[in-house]
Length: 182
Image (cartoon, rainbow, N blue to C red; front, top):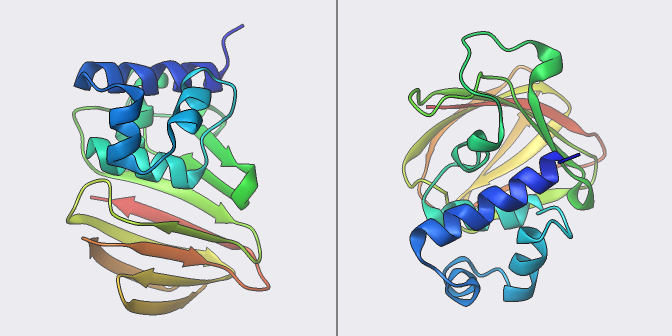
């Protein structure tokens, strides 16, 4: 039986081949080692959040756009049990796409959890200038957008356009938050 990881591996390979890139060319553009890319494309390992972020940047696609074709076709309603969840166990990160998948619509809602004492950093945005609304549901989170640092608590909302690096870091408490991508 084909797993989500198998479908993700095939999707990532298809995107690379559609660009006409070799594994080495993708490694050069993304900064992810050729051996890691090979292992991901062969479904030997699941990509980390950092790896997906680097690939999204290389392809200039959001992570959701990169993942959407491995999910079901568009339907206007998606039940909670059917929402796509991706886990990065190495970084204590979970990403649940709450919006129904759609290639034709741009806004999406993503539910994220980041375990205590964890940090995820992205060198560059997948789509420069992409608008984000980060709504804290619980815990605390330090968010760096370029050189600006923001400390968020439950109920806070940070709105920003992403042009450079970003970093999400928790302390003693895990963080649960929504990101609305426009």
